[in-house]
Length: 128
Image (tube, rainbow, N blue to C red; front, side, top):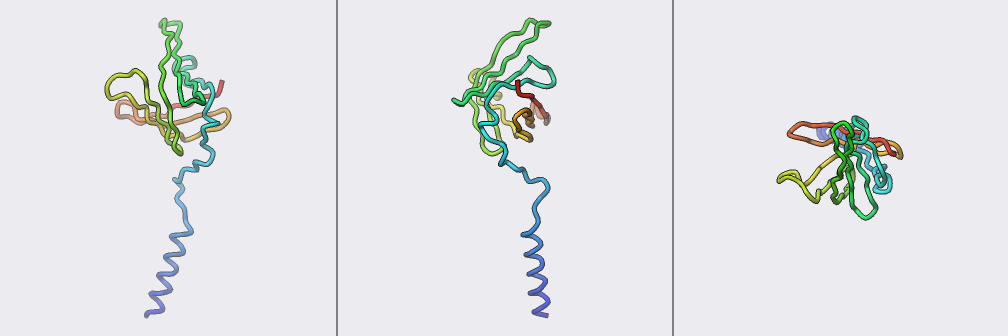
């Protein structure tokens, strides 16, 4: 009986340590150097286009000729693994930090998840 318990414990240990979760994020391809540059918002090009600078600053430009909008928001950004945070210079109370989780970052594509007004949203961008 002792041998059976020992073998069962060994099998359990091996099976648990050899499996990995399908949900594990592979953060090795998410780097600051890939993030830096100009991006265009896929859902509404010209309206909410971020530019990430090497000095840790970010500008999000909004332009919509129909509405007469042409302005930018500025902030600082940090990247820790797949977590990208933008700390806005000027914002309404409670909205100072834009906390995203990058789900794709390549030379041409940026996609992140963010909670806005209590709802999970996915935003995607293409490099300009």
